[in-house]
Each structure stands twice: as structure tokens, then as C-alpha cells.
Amino acid sequence: MVEAVNRPFLEYTGKVQPKLGERGANGQLLYPYFPNPELVEAVNLAIYLERPLLLKGEPGCGKTLLASAVAYELGLKLEAWYVKSTSRGRDGLYNYDAVGRLRDAQLATSNRLTAEQILRIDDPTTYVRWGPLGRAFQQEQRTVVLIDEIDKADIVSGRSFIVMIQIFEILLKLSTGQL
Image (cartoon, rainbow, N blue to C red):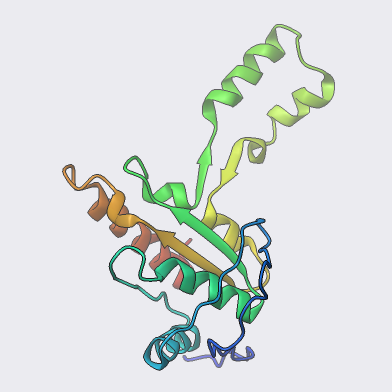
């Protein structure tokens, strides 16, 4: 059964620009971005369909600036994941610090931790470091997620292909409620 979603439709126009010298939430300088009408239409289609928008282009053509511009105009938070050669699909969601937990457990057995610190060891969320996708999915409000430089992944080992497949598997599971 199809269920109607009653969300206000966000529309990107490309006409709302930051003021000279304005900085984003992360402290970085914001720059104006003037998209062509076809790109504005593609962005709005992705928003309406609630699907990712894959952009391909030469370095410096403005793919990263577009994500920032969309977030700025629509008043949304921007989460950026800059993929590296060592990145795994899971890194976008979270990392679990097992070494840190082991260290804390060893310190606890040698009576080097306070009672408060010992209680912290029993909470698994203490050792979870959320990635950009994980932080985005925890937000009440929609979030613009930029997965950038996926082409920088190690092509020789097929790492970029593996990371991309893992990302799409995560997105598919999230969209179908399996995650």
C-alpha cells in the first residue's frame, strides 16, 4: 500500500546567495554558486523523490559548492564525507573504538578509573564515533549529505567500487527500513 507523505516540499532556486564574508556553521567561508536551470531542476527532482543526486564532473567544476549552496538556501545542515583510499562504506555511518574500550577496561581492572569512568565503559555508545551518514540519519530535519572524492579511493584494489556498492547498500536498507 502506498502511503502519502505529508512533508512540505523544499525547493531550491539557486537565487539565495551568502553575503560577502559570511561563514557557515563549520566556520568555513561561503561562496556564491550560480547553477544553470537544468541543475536546479535535477536538485529539485532529487529532493521531491527523496533520492540521492549523483554528480560527475571535472575537478573544480562546483560539485562540492552545489551541496553547500543547496544546504545554505534551504537552511539545512550539511554533512560532508570525504572518502579516502582507506575508506569503507561503514565509515560513513560509524566507527566503533574497540581499542579505546579495551584500554578503559584494562584501566578499570587496575583501579585507575573513577566510578563515573567505569560506568561509562558499560555504555557502548561511549565508543561509537558517528560518521556523516550516521549523523545525518539521526537528525530530525532533512540533511544535505555530500559524499565527496569517491574517485580518490584506491582503484587498483577496486576499493572505490566496493565503497560505492557499500554506500548504495546502506542507502537502500535505510530507504526500505531494513537498517
